[in-house]
Every structure is written in structure tokens, then in C-alpha cells.
Amino acid sequence: MLWEMRDPVQSLSAAVADTASALRGDGPVGETSLERPKKPEFGDYSTNAALLLAPGLGQPPRDVAARLGDSLGERLGGAVERVEVAGPGFLNLFLSDSWFCAAVSEILAAADAYGAGNPERGERINVEFVSANPTGPITVAAGRHAAYGDSLCRILSLAGNEVDREYYVNDYGTQIERFASSIQARAKGEDPPDDGYQGTYVNEIAEAIEGAADSDADELGRRGVEIMLQGVRETLERFRVHMDRFSHERSLYDSGAVAAILDRLEEREHVYPLDGAVWLRTTTFGDDKDRVLMRTSGEMTYFTPDIANHEHKRERGYDRVIDVWGADHHGYVRRMQAAWEALGADPERLELLIMQLVNLIEAGRRSQMSKRQGEFVTLDDLVDDVGIDATRWFLLQRSHETTLDLDLDLARRQSQDNPVYYAQYAHARIASILRKAGPHRVQAALAADVAASAEQWQPSARALVKRLLEFPEEVRDAADRRAPHRMTTYVTETAQAFSGFYRDCKVVGAAEEGGDEDLRIALCEATRRVIAQGLDLLGVTAPDEM
Image (cartoon, rainbow, N blue to C red; front, side, top):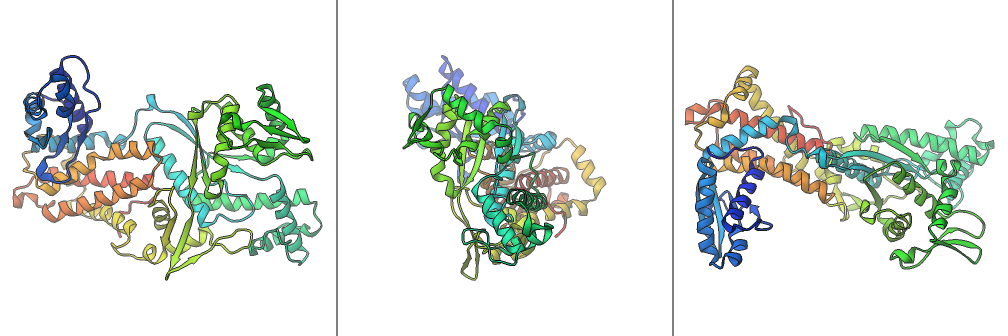
């Protein structure tokens, strides 16, 4: 073969772009595309390069496509079976069996690095997520934040970035005072205040703190937060979410960072006094009105420590800061972006993502969740009900920008109607095939030169390989779009592609139907690895048996 394959799709795309540039003769053509046609009869891949070339060459696009096809055929050699001009000037590429054999070899050779980005082009990123108020257990709503943030961090890391996961603890101010008064009321055998916290967990905290009925309110709030945070850590670790850092609002006050942020903003001439309060001129940076930093009483608003928290992140030297906030923070986005710019930071380096709500659906009924009123379903409750894998998958299966309805009946179902079960079953089925072949046979197949195989590929086998080759691009897209839900779709489609392959192609005993058993075992192992990697990016296990 005249053309050396590395990342098969990227190499093919580069070959198309280079051939088009050579045909043009005066530099790059532009954004040439290489896409999979919806129907296999239109080729394995299709490119619009001729349509981009035609205006500059002053020739009809179909004529240019024919010339490009001839040149590309010479460049790719045995990697391409034939090329066809289609429509107004698209060029369809039909790749050879040898190309697919080499593609399987390349996927296996990449091992755990398959789909990984280039660290030299990566960023140091801080992702703050969950950050639920430490006044109650982690609810299902906060669990969606946990699943999303953790999966996003996994994907960003594989894409070549250095990622720090942060939980910001709002442990200062009015809400903590209300929390403390609620604990004290329960310790005295009384009902919490109307604006306090009503959940039964408050009783448990009151019982756990000796002398709670007579404790100082500030100390009682601190101890209550400590107990809640211990539960938060345990819940998150159980949910396979590890936080690198817990930062505390209280520490920003204790260290003087909150007071210092006023001085910094004043030095930059972005604050002003009015009616006894101190204001930040956020309208300078696109906000609809200026915002109060310090009230006439001398008390800071919630906004001020939040600014100090983001300044602290800037001081830690991150290239990018990503915050995952709840749906009730939508109106907060513009003011925080304004404050970020007021600090002199690059607005492109702060991303504020809004997570929409999640509803639990059972027999057509929705469960309402209110931490203060005590009417909520905890993440632990949901995990106890449907399991960690199903919980993570179902919380991730829709874009974070849309409200999610989680069907409990479907999540509990141990059948292929359940998408996470279907995906895991595909992995378990492959593991079973490999066990049937035996470890020595699998080892021999992986050591064989499958790139030199004479296998005559079935359409379903080709479709499976092309799906596996999409994995690196899927990782890049999921990272760039901050969209872990794309991985649930990709894993499902890969499992479906494997099902089609296994239906049409015998693996163990392939020689009986004229197939190459080494290659087919290798393809099974490549598929198993990709499915396992995709599931891991979702925080879902890849079982060998089900």
C-alpha cells in the first residue's frame, strides 16, 4: 500500500485535503469534509472537496471530482477500491478490505490511548460542579450535576486536558443561620422556623450533636455543615465521583479575600457608593443593571464572595474555568461574566453552564424535590433503587440544557429495552465470545498480523469498523460541546453495530465460512475496548458477565 495509515480517518481526511491542494496548485482548499454517507451504497466516505475546488479551477464540479478521484486513487493505492462521482460533484470513496484490516490493527495498536487527545495542546481546566448547599443530603437533582460534571471531566481529560474537580461549599450567611436554628429547634423538641429546614435529616443531625439545644448558633451551623459534608463526600464517592478540592465560602471571609475583592475592584474603578451601599458597575460589561456588593448594613451580598472565589481560581493559574450551575442560576450568568471581566480576566476563559431540572417518573407521576420542606428523593435513594450504572446512564442520556424525565420503570428493567443494560450486555457478549475462544487463542489472534488479512468484509463488519473509527471524533466533539450525553448515543450505536456484525459473521470457527478467525477475534477485542472506554467516560461499568 502506498499510503501509511495512522489514525485511519484523520489520515484519509488529510490525504483528501493534500490531494485537493495539489490539484489546485496554490495552497489549501479550505474546510474539506469527509463524512459517512447515510447509505452504504454511496461509499464508505464522501467528500465535498471537488465542490470547493471547482470555482478556483473554473471547471464543472463533476469534472473536478473525476480528476480528484484519479489523483486520490493513485495516492491511496490499495487502500481504495474505487471512487465514484455523485450528485453535483461529491466524491464517494469505496475503501478496500485491506484498509479495514489495517484500521482494526491501528485501533488495537493504540490500546488505552485510542481516542485520547494531544496533551501538548491541552488546557489546565477547573470544573466546579454539584456545589449543593450543605444544608441537606445530595438530591437526585444534584445527582444530575454530579453525573454530568464527573463525565465531562473524564472526557476533557481523555481529550488531553489537565482537569481539577471542585466543590464550592456555601457555608456562610443567612442559609446557614437558618440551618442552625432548624437544628436547634429540633434539639429542643420544637418545629423549625417557617423559613428553616423541615426534613427528618435535621432531627438526625440534632441527635448527633451533643448539647445542640444550648449550642452557640455559629458553632452549631459549623458542626451541622461538617456532618452534612461528610455525607456528601460518602454519597459522591459511592457514585464514583471524586472531588479534587472542596473550597469554602467561609474561608474566603476568614482569609480576608472577600474584603480584598472590594479593594481590587475599586482599584480598577469598577465600584461606586450609592445610598450607603457599594455597587459593582456590571453594566459596563453588558449586564442589564449594576449589582450591589455590600449592603447599607455592611453585610456582603452573595455575589461578593462568589467573585472572590473566582478571583481565587484565577490566582491558581487555570487556563479555563467551567462552572456547572442549576436552572435557578440562569439570571446570575451575565453578572458573573461581568464581574470576571471587571477583574481583568479574558471572558473566553470562563464558561457558565446551566443544568436543567430532572423529574423522576413512575406510573405517570412526578416526584417533587424541595430540600427545605423535606420533600425530596436523595441520590442514595435512587441508587438503592436502580443501581449506580443505571442512575448515571439515565442522568446523562439527555443534554444538560434540557429538562430530563427519568423513567424509573425502564431504569429498573433488566432487559435490552433498557439502554444501559443493552450497552453492557454487548460488552458481556463480547467477553463471552473471547472466553469461548480461550485466552491462548485470543492472545495468538492479537499477536497476528491482521493488517495483512485476506478477509472479505461483510457490510455489517465494515459498518462496525467505521463506527469504532468514529470514537476519537466523538470524544473531541463531546469535549468541545461539553456534551457527555453524546457518549450514551455513541455507545448504544456501537453496541447495535456489533449486534449486526455478530449476526452475520461467525467468530469462533470463522474458517468454516471462509472467514479469518484471527481478524474477527481482533475486531471483537477492539469493539470490547471501545465500548468499555465509552462506558467508563460515563462512569458506568463494563461487565464481563450478565
